[in-house]
Image (cartoon, rainbow, N blue to C red; front, side, top):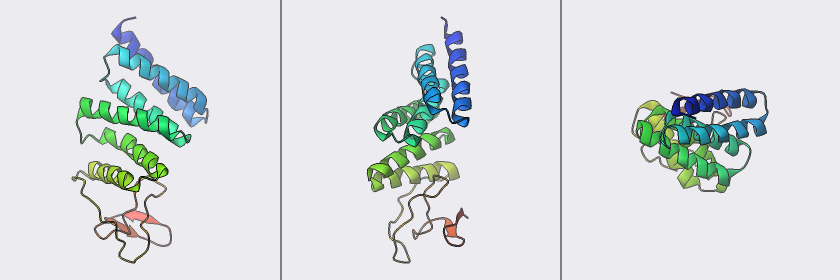
Length: 172
């Protein structure tokens, strides 16, 4: 099987995995993502757009399914692939970095999660990620995650979010 055929098959597996995921058939999506990753890695070497996308999607799926050990390994691989293929500040890095932050947060590594979330925000806003103070101005605990998956910066002194009512967050 030549490289072009492998890449085409990898893209088909990725598309099928997206459909399965949207339908809630996660086991089938996982199988397709693993197949896409295998094909993409052998098609154009380990640094290809398809391999990075498949690794990212698989890691995010595993994190959502509550398998953080597997997810962390694959997400680190996805981040590595994206950084080698596109550079350290490419917006395509935000989904695997965000999911990796969720994995670290789930494990209780809040400092590691905070660094990853700060990097996500830095990439998404086009600014360099800077260390965020952990002290809340109102004296309460910091809010580490909103429903969007991004960290809530409303409790940090140098954060960029504004609280708009109980439990609501918006960046502004």
